[in-house]
Amino acid sequence: MKRLTDGFDIKVLIVDDDQSILSALSRVLKRWGAKVECVDNAAAAAARVEDERYDVILLDLRMPGKDGVWFVGNAELPDETKVVLMTAYIPDDILTNLFEAGVDEYLEKPFSCSDLTHLLDRYAAA
Image 1 (cartoon, rainbow, N blue to C red):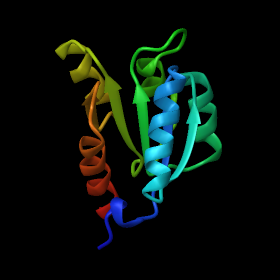
Image 2 (image 1 turned 120 degrees about the horizontal axis):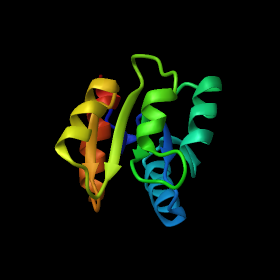
Image 3 (image 1 turned 180 degrees about the vertical axis):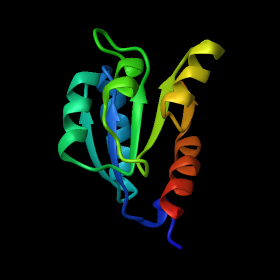
Image 4 (image 1 turned 60 degrees about the vertical axis):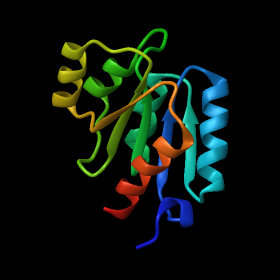
C-alpha cells in the first residue's frame, strides 16, 4: 500500500490560529500529495466539516475564542475522520476527556516532519 510520502491521496483539514503553522504544514502536506485545506479558528472548522469530508483533522488546542475543546464537542464528524490534537501543553485530565470525546491522537508541539509523516502514514494505510 502507498504511504503518504509516496503520494498517497489523503484529505487534511488544518485548524490553527498561527498563520506560520498553517502555511508550513500546508506546504509540507501538499508536497507529499495530500489535499489540504486550512482554517484559523474552531468555528470555521466546524462549519467546514458540515460540507466536506476529511480523512484527518490537525487541530490546535489553544486558539482565541472557540478552541480545540469546543471543536471536539461541537463538530459533527464521521467516525472515519481522525482528529489529531496539536498542542504544546495539555493536562492529563483534559487529554483524557478529549480522547473520550473523539480525539484519536495528539502531537506535542513542536513536532518534526517525521513525527507527522509517521502518524499520517498510519491513517493513509488504514
